Image (cartoon, rainbow, N blue to C red; front, side, top):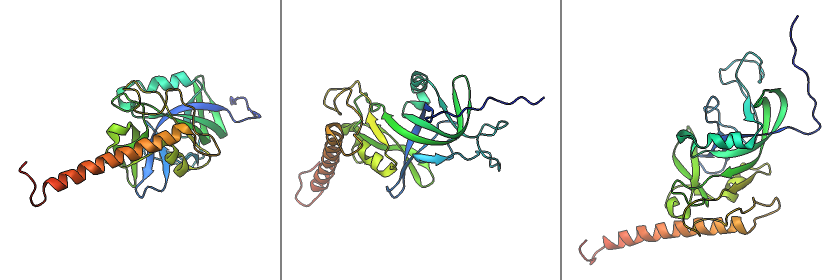
Length: 235
C-alpha cells in the first residue's frame, strides 16, 4: 500500500521565515534575492516559482528530490541562522507559502512564494543600516548587497531600503533592524517598516543619510584631486 500524505487546503497562505542575500542587477534596475545554501545558484524575485536545482523536469516540490523553496515555521529559528559567520550579511525574509507544499516538522518545502517583508540587520561595524551596499561578491549580472551604515557605505554601489523595495516591486516591505553602534548612525531603534502607500520618517531619514554619505565621499575625492593640481602644497 502506498502511503499518501494528508492533503491541506488552508483558507489563507501559510507564512514562514527564511534567510537570503539581497541582490541588485548589474544595471541597477531590478532587485531580488538568492538563497544561502542549496538554491544559491538560482536568484529569485519577490514573487517567483521554484525550479529544480538539479535540472530535472519535474515540478517542485518533488517528494524524491530536494528542490523547491524552503522556510521554517518559527521566526526565531530563522534568526538563529544569522548568528553563523557565513550568514552574518544575510537578511531575514517573511514569506507567504503559495502553490503545492510539503509540510515538515520545522517548516515547508514549496512550489511558489511571495516575499512579504525583509528585515536588514546592522552594518558590519555594529551601527544600524541605512542602505544596502555592494557586499563585494555576486552572481553573473547581479551584485550581492549587505546592510551598511552611512559611514561605511562611502562610494560603494548602494540603495536605500525604500529604494530596494521599489525596485523589487510586488508591495515588498523593507525594514532595518536596530544596530549596536553609535546613536544617530541609522534610523530610530524599533522603527516600523515602510507604509504601503508611501515613505515614512524612517525611510526618509535613511535616504538622507545615504545621500549625505555619498556627498561626503565625493567631497573627499575632490579634495584629493585638488591637492594634486598646479600650485598645490607638497604632500
